[in-house]
Amino acid sequence: MQFLNASNGTEILDELIGVILENRTYLSEVDGAIGDGDHGINMAKGFRLCGEAIEGKQLSLHKALSNLATTLMGSIGGSMGPLYGSFFLGMANAVKDKDTIDAKAFGDMLSGGQTALQGISDAQVGDKCLIDTLTPAIAAYQKAIEAGESFPAALQALKTGAQQGRDSTKDLEARIGRASRLGERSKGHLDAGAVSCCLLLTQLADSTESRLETAAA
Picture 1 (cartoon, rainbow, N blue to C red):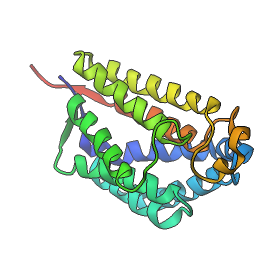
Picture 2: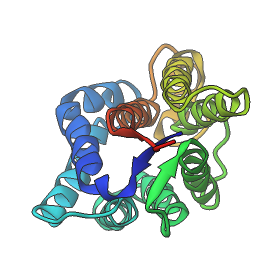
Picture 3: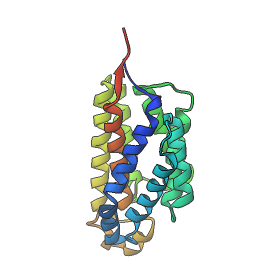
Protein backbone atom coordinates (compact mmCIF):
# COMPACT_ATOMS: atom_id res chain seq x y z
CA MET A 1 0.00 0.00 0.00
CA GLN A 2 1.25 3.47 -0.87
CA PHE A 3 0.73 6.42 1.42
CA LEU A 4 1.71 10.02 2.07
CA ASN A 5 3.34 10.85 5.39
CA ALA A 6 1.23 13.65 6.86
CA SER A 7 4.35 15.30 8.29
CA ASN A 8 5.13 16.63 4.80
CA GLY A 9 2.70 19.54 5.16
CA THR A 10 5.19 22.39 4.96
CA GLU A 11 6.90 21.03 1.85
CA ILE A 12 3.62 20.45 0.03
CA LEU A 13 2.29 23.87 0.99
CA ASP A 14 5.51 25.52 -0.18
CA GLU A 15 4.97 23.96 -3.60
CA LEU A 16 1.33 25.08 -3.74
CA ILE A 17 2.45 28.60 -2.86
CA GLY A 18 5.13 28.40 -5.54
CA VAL A 19 2.76 27.48 -8.35
CA ILE A 20 0.48 30.42 -7.56
CA LEU A 21 3.35 32.90 -7.33
CA GLU A 22 4.82 31.61 -10.59
CA ASN A 23 1.49 32.07 -12.36
CA ARG A 24 0.53 35.42 -10.84
CA THR A 25 0.71 37.32 -14.12
CA TYR A 26 -0.96 34.57 -16.14
CA LEU A 27 -3.91 34.33 -13.75
CA SER A 28 -4.47 38.07 -13.91
CA GLU A 29 -4.28 37.99 -17.70
CA VAL A 30 -6.93 35.26 -17.82
CA ASP A 31 -9.09 37.21 -15.39
CA GLY A 32 -8.62 40.43 -17.33
CA ALA A 33 -10.44 39.04 -20.36
CA ILE A 34 -13.84 38.95 -18.63
CA GLY A 35 -13.23 40.00 -15.02
CA ASP A 36 -11.42 42.55 -12.89
CA GLY A 37 -7.97 41.31 -13.87
CA ASP A 38 -6.83 40.97 -10.27
CA HIS A 39 -7.18 37.24 -9.62
CA GLY A 40 -3.46 36.59 -9.88
CA ILE A 41 -2.62 39.59 -7.71
CA ASN A 42 -5.06 38.59 -4.97
CA MET A 43 -4.15 34.90 -5.01
CA ALA A 44 -0.43 35.67 -4.96
CA LYS A 45 -0.93 38.04 -2.04
CA GLY A 46 -2.73 35.43 0.05
CA PHE A 47 -0.36 32.58 -0.75
CA ARG A 48 2.71 34.78 -0.23
CA LEU A 49 1.47 35.86 3.20
CA CYS A 50 0.91 32.23 4.11
CA GLY A 51 4.43 31.39 3.03
CA GLU A 52 5.79 34.11 5.28
CA ALA A 53 3.68 32.86 8.19
CA ILE A 54 4.93 29.27 7.99
CA GLU A 55 8.58 30.02 7.18
CA GLY A 56 10.87 27.93 9.33
CA LYS A 57 8.04 25.78 10.68
CA GLN A 58 7.62 22.05 10.12
CA LEU A 59 3.88 21.47 9.91
CA SER A 60 1.65 18.48 9.41
CA LEU A 61 -0.61 18.54 6.38
CA HIS A 62 -3.54 19.37 8.65
CA LYS A 63 -1.79 22.37 10.18
CA ALA A 64 -0.36 23.55 6.87
CA LEU A 65 -3.74 23.52 5.16
CA SER A 66 -5.36 25.15 8.19
CA ASN A 67 -2.80 27.95 8.05
CA LEU A 68 -3.46 28.42 4.35
CA ALA A 69 -7.22 28.50 4.87
CA THR A 70 -7.02 31.08 7.65
CA THR A 71 -4.66 33.30 5.68
CA LEU A 72 -6.75 33.21 2.51
CA MET A 73 -9.95 34.01 4.37
CA GLY A 74 -8.32 37.02 5.98
CA SER A 75 -6.29 38.42 3.11
CA ILE A 76 -8.06 37.86 -0.23
CA GLY A 77 -10.86 40.22 -1.14
CA GLY A 78 -14.01 39.27 -3.01
CA SER A 79 -15.30 35.72 -3.16
CA MET A 80 -12.04 33.84 -3.66
CA GLY A 81 -10.83 34.18 -0.07
CA PRO A 82 -13.90 32.53 1.49
CA LEU A 83 -14.19 29.96 -1.30
CA TYR A 84 -10.61 28.74 -1.28
CA GLY A 85 -10.37 29.24 2.47
CA SER A 86 -13.37 26.98 3.04
CA PHE A 87 -12.01 24.43 0.59
CA PHE A 88 -8.63 24.14 2.27
CA LEU A 89 -10.16 24.18 5.75
CA GLY A 90 -12.44 21.30 4.78
CA MET A 91 -9.42 19.41 3.50
CA ALA A 92 -7.50 20.14 6.67
CA ASN A 93 -10.27 18.90 8.92
CA ALA A 94 -10.49 15.65 6.98
CA VAL A 95 -6.87 14.77 7.82
CA LYS A 96 -6.77 16.23 11.33
CA ASP A 97 -5.94 12.97 13.08
CA LYS A 98 -4.01 11.31 10.26
CA ASP A 99 -0.34 10.38 10.49
CA THR A 100 -0.44 8.75 7.08
CA ILE A 101 -2.73 9.38 4.14
CA ASP A 102 -3.53 6.53 1.78
CA ALA A 103 -5.51 6.77 -1.44
CA LYS A 104 -8.87 6.58 0.31
CA ALA A 105 -7.94 9.19 2.91
CA PHE A 106 -6.69 11.48 0.16
CA GLY A 107 -10.04 11.14 -1.57
CA ASP A 108 -11.81 11.87 1.70
CA MET A 109 -9.64 14.97 2.05
CA LEU A 110 -10.66 16.21 -1.39
CA SER A 111 -14.32 15.48 -0.69
CA GLY A 112 -14.08 17.27 2.64
CA GLY A 113 -12.84 20.37 0.87
CA GLN A 114 -15.54 20.14 -1.77
CA THR A 115 -18.29 19.75 0.83
CA ALA A 116 -17.02 22.74 2.81
CA LEU A 117 -16.88 24.92 -0.28
CA GLN A 118 -20.36 23.91 -1.38
CA GLY A 119 -21.57 24.81 2.09
CA ILE A 120 -20.99 28.50 1.38
CA SER A 121 -21.64 28.62 -2.37
CA ASP A 122 -24.56 27.74 -4.62
CA ALA A 123 -22.31 27.53 -7.68
CA GLN A 124 -22.82 24.51 -9.89
CA VAL A 125 -20.97 22.83 -12.74
CA GLY A 126 -21.71 24.87 -15.83
CA ASP A 127 -21.65 28.25 -14.08
CA LYS A 128 -18.13 29.01 -15.40
CA CYS A 129 -16.23 29.00 -12.13
CA LEU A 130 -13.76 26.94 -10.10
CA ILE A 131 -16.47 24.32 -9.47
CA ASP A 132 -16.17 23.39 -13.15
CA THR A 133 -12.62 22.27 -12.40
CA LEU A 134 -13.06 20.90 -8.89
CA THR A 135 -16.10 18.67 -9.35
CA PRO A 136 -14.94 16.62 -12.37
CA ALA A 137 -11.42 16.36 -10.95
CA ILE A 138 -12.60 14.84 -7.68
CA ALA A 139 -15.11 12.63 -9.49
CA ALA A 140 -12.33 11.30 -11.74
CA TYR A 141 -10.14 10.57 -8.72
CA GLN A 142 -12.91 8.73 -6.88
CA LYS A 143 -13.84 6.76 -9.99
CA ALA A 144 -10.24 5.60 -10.36
CA ILE A 145 -10.08 4.49 -6.72
CA GLU A 146 -13.39 2.65 -6.98
CA ALA A 147 -12.07 0.88 -10.08
CA GLY A 148 -9.09 -0.40 -8.08
CA GLU A 149 -6.51 1.87 -9.69
CA SER A 150 -3.26 2.62 -7.87
CA PHE A 151 -2.73 5.81 -5.88
CA PRO A 152 -0.50 7.32 -8.61
CA ALA A 153 -3.03 6.41 -11.31
CA ALA A 154 -5.81 8.06 -9.32
CA LEU A 155 -3.68 11.18 -8.92
CA GLN A 156 -3.20 11.26 -12.69
CA ALA A 157 -6.97 10.96 -13.10
CA LEU A 158 -7.36 13.92 -10.75
CA LYS A 159 -5.04 16.01 -12.91
CA THR A 160 -6.74 14.98 -16.14
CA GLY A 161 -10.17 15.72 -14.72
CA ALA A 162 -9.00 19.13 -13.51
CA GLN A 163 -7.53 20.02 -16.89
CA GLN A 164 -10.65 18.94 -18.75
CA GLY A 165 -12.83 20.87 -16.32
CA ARG A 166 -10.70 23.98 -16.70
CA ASP A 167 -10.87 23.79 -20.48
CA SER A 168 -14.64 23.31 -20.42
CA THR A 169 -15.10 26.83 -19.06
CA LYS A 170 -13.93 28.38 -22.31
CA ASP A 171 -17.19 27.54 -24.08
CA LEU A 172 -19.46 28.36 -21.15
CA GLU A 173 -21.48 31.51 -20.61
CA ALA A 174 -20.81 32.90 -17.14
CA ARG A 175 -23.80 32.64 -14.81
CA ILE A 176 -22.22 34.07 -11.68
CA GLY A 177 -19.73 36.78 -10.77
CA ARG A 178 -18.72 39.89 -12.65
CA ALA A 179 -18.34 37.99 -15.92
CA SER A 180 -22.05 37.10 -15.88
CA ARG A 181 -22.81 40.71 -16.86
CA LEU A 182 -21.21 40.03 -20.24
CA GLY A 183 -23.67 37.29 -21.16
CA GLU A 184 -22.72 35.63 -24.45
CA ARG A 185 -19.55 37.73 -24.62
CA SER A 186 -18.12 35.74 -21.71
CA LYS A 187 -17.83 32.73 -24.01
CA GLY A 188 -14.47 32.05 -25.60
CA HIS A 189 -12.46 32.74 -22.46
CA LEU A 190 -11.29 30.53 -19.61
CA ASP A 191 -12.49 31.29 -16.10
CA ALA A 192 -9.66 32.47 -13.87
CA GLY A 193 -10.92 30.57 -10.81
CA ALA A 194 -11.11 27.38 -12.83
CA VAL A 195 -7.53 27.96 -13.99
CA SER A 196 -6.15 28.58 -10.50
CA CYS A 197 -8.03 25.54 -9.19
CA CYS A 198 -6.47 23.40 -11.91
CA LEU A 199 -3.01 24.71 -11.05
CA LEU A 200 -3.52 23.90 -7.37
CA LEU A 201 -4.97 20.42 -7.89
CA THR A 202 -2.28 19.53 -10.40
CA GLN A 203 0.47 20.69 -8.04
CA LEU A 204 -1.15 18.90 -5.11
CA ALA A 205 -1.22 15.68 -7.11
CA ASP A 206 2.41 16.07 -8.21
CA SER A 207 3.59 16.99 -4.72
CA THR A 208 1.79 14.00 -3.26
CA GLU A 209 2.98 11.50 -5.85
CA SER A 210 6.61 12.55 -5.46
CA ARG A 211 6.42 11.78 -1.72
CA LEU A 212 4.52 8.50 -1.75
CA GLU A 213 5.96 5.76 0.41
CA THR A 214 5.22 2.05 0.33
CA ALA A 215 4.17 0.30 3.49
CA ALA A 216 6.23 -2.71 4.50
CA ALA A 217 4.57 -6.02 3.74
